[in-house]
Structures are given as C-alpha cells and as structure tokens.
Length: 487
Ligand code: BG6
Image 1 (cartoon, rainbow, N blue to C red):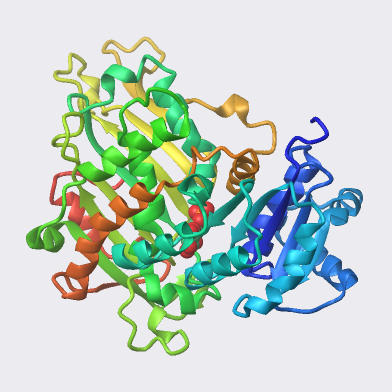
Image 2 (cartoon, rainbow, N blue to C red):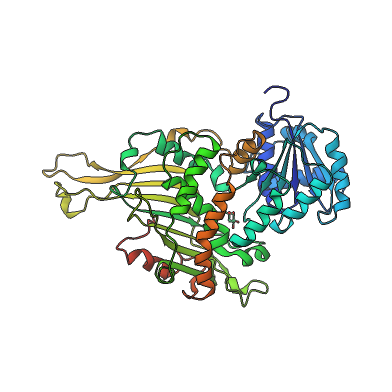
C-alpha cells in the first residue's frame, strides 16, 4: 500500500450503537490488520457519552472480544489497531457541539472523510445540516446511510432530499449489507462468467425461483425499531429485493457502478404492481406466538414489552411476478421471518423438468435440475444434477447428486459483508450501494402491498416460534403446484 492509499478519517455517528460495535468495529479491525486501511487513518467514534480515551479503548476492546468471530481477537493486533481509535463526544441534536468534531477533523483537512451515519434515519438530515454548518463536508467527503431509509416512498424521499441538500448523489453510499456478502457477489460471477448458464437463464428453462431468508433469532433488543418496520420494511423491501435484482437483471455492459445499477433498477421497474386480489392471494403476513427456540421456550411477539396491540408482521411471504421478456411466467416466491425453526438463507433456481424421460429409474422421477445458492448459515453454491448409480443392474438407475461449486475456495477466512462495503466506500467505489432511483422503485412496489395490509385485505396469520412459519405460506406456493425447498 502506498503512503496515501486508503488513508481517510472514518467517522462513525452512533459510535456506541449496536451496529457500530457488532459490525463496523470488527470490520475496521480486520481491514486495518489485513492492510486495507492505512495505519494512519483515524476511526472516530462520535457519541453523546463522555469518557476518557483509556475508557474508550477499553470499551472497544471488550466489544471486539465479544463480537469478533471466535479466535480472531489478537492482543498484539489490537495494540496496533487501538492507535487509530478516537472518541469524539457530540450530542448530535445540538449543533454547537459539532465544534469538537470540527477541531478533530481540522487536523487533516485534506483527507478523505467517510461519514458513517449509524443512527436512526430521523437524524440523517440534522447531522448533515450541522456538518455543513461547521464546514465539515469537502469534495473528498462521503456519507454512508444505513437502511431502512424511510418507512415508505414519501418518507424515504424526505430523508434523501435532506441529505442531498448537502451531499452530491455521487457522495452518498446507501448500504444494503446483503450486497457485501461474498456469495451474493458471486451471483454476478456465476451468471456472467459462465457461458453454461447464459442460455438457460430464462422463462424457457426456469420453472420458478425461491428466496428464503429465515432467522431463528427474534427481534433481540430492537423492539422500538422493529415494531415500526416489520418484515416487509426490514428485509423484503431491501435485502430480498436486491437479491431478486441480481438474479433477474440483464448482463450489464460493464462492472462500473452505473451500468450495474441501471440494470438492477430496470428489474425493480418491471415488478408487476399488486392488485387488491393479488395482495389477497399472493401475500402472507404473520406474527409469531410463543413456542421454542433451541429447545427453550420463548414468548410470542405480542408478549414483548408494550407489544400487546402490535400489528407488525414478523414474517412475510409473497409471490412476485416480473413483467419482461426474460421472466414472463416465472414466479419468484420469497419469504422471510424471525423466530423460525432454523437460520437459513438461500436462493433456489428451479429449472424445468426434461421434456421426456427415457429412463425407467424404478418408478422414481427424474428430478429437475436445481441451483442452490446458500447464504446462511454456510455460504455455498450447489448444482443438483442427475447421475448414474454405479453398478451392473439391468436397467440404468439414476440418483440426484450435488455438484459443489465452491468447496475448494473454502480455506481462507471469508471477509464479512461490512468489510467489503466499508472498503468500497474507502476506495470510493459505489457499485454495491443503492442509487436513489433503486430505493425509490423498491418503495413504490412495496408501498402498494403495505397499504393493502394496512387495509387488512389479507388478515394477519400466526405461527409458533420455532416452527417453519405459517401454513398460509406453504399454501401460497402449493396452490401453484410447487413447494418450498427444505433440505
Ligand atoms: C438487518 C435487519 O438488516 O439484517 C435484521 O435489520 C436482520 O433484522 C439482519 O436480522 C439479517 O442479516 P444477516 O446478515 O444476519 O442475514
């Protein structure tokens, strides 16, 4: 790394928040130790809490020990890393307090500045206004916005336009951490670097697509946030929509940020808007009731503090159609929920069956090929193919086997999504971040469903914690003669 490469000030607003400790600090620790963040870069935690430098270092250390994956904390590495850490005490609501930040940043006026807004979106405008007032936004400043940006199209527009008063669109990095996952990026590699998939990736050959993001955890300590958002706004409108885009998009003309984002936004604009009867037949929303998690009994969602009247969904399943040439007639079934029986995130590309079978195969059918892209708990890509069972039987017998595409790559530590994304912000590469029109198109589509749900077009269902979700979600796909992929 040259002396100036990746040299910047990373300023984390909400520096003592859950995201900062759980994801951002561990990511910066790895980037710094692995030589991707210049050792002279500073990491400034901006928080309301006043404490001494020593107390700050001790706190970050204990959080790293808690949140780094097992065995990855190293005393010696931390000794180097801590030299980059600083605490800046600012009450973000009080403009005059930004003076401290002004003084800290003034030491290196020409540095790239990464302003990471790890706060409630309601503060984005206030923070940007004060940064501007204190002259802290330079041409080399970038701002990272955490999702969700708004609760609907209107509030998202309001937040974005506040930020756009002070930053250019090219300086804004709207993060969706799913895009930083290695396997999610591999979708593009898989699709656009293998001739093999190219002619098969369409309605002639694919029967349907499934996307599942199932979590066994509940809402943890985030009741206040989650109850205002629910599964649709927290997961579907952003993470699952981005996965749909990567699966469904046309090949971009290059890998530059706008070429990729142009193709993604076309997918979002081609999502068929739901009618009232679509909402009734093709969407499921549900809330978990008491049940079990890892063998222990857990309370239902409504039993959370002040939640007894909550109408927030903790599970959503939908059938989505894309109106374009490539995907006409290929349904995308998606589902996501909390407190399910297991953590499992995967994308299933279900190919059509062969037109006619010449194999008797002892009455067993020839399974259609399936491409299984697993994101969690383990990242992997498998292609399910039919193969002959070795032996001398009179009639040839076949079985389904898995062709594992990435087993050989599994030897090194896979970087976490936030490492990839923070590094991209540091390098000023916005390809994996959402452009304004993407966010707005996703909201436009989601708003219709959310409005239908508010009007109770489809009733809220329930499912027991620790189950595989509401039966209505199973019925949703079975009505079409298909079933969820569950191994
Ligand atoms: C976040 C949501 O964006 O993604 C959380 O706000 C969710 O509710 C999390 O738990 C899931 O991320 P991952 O990477 O663990 O699948």
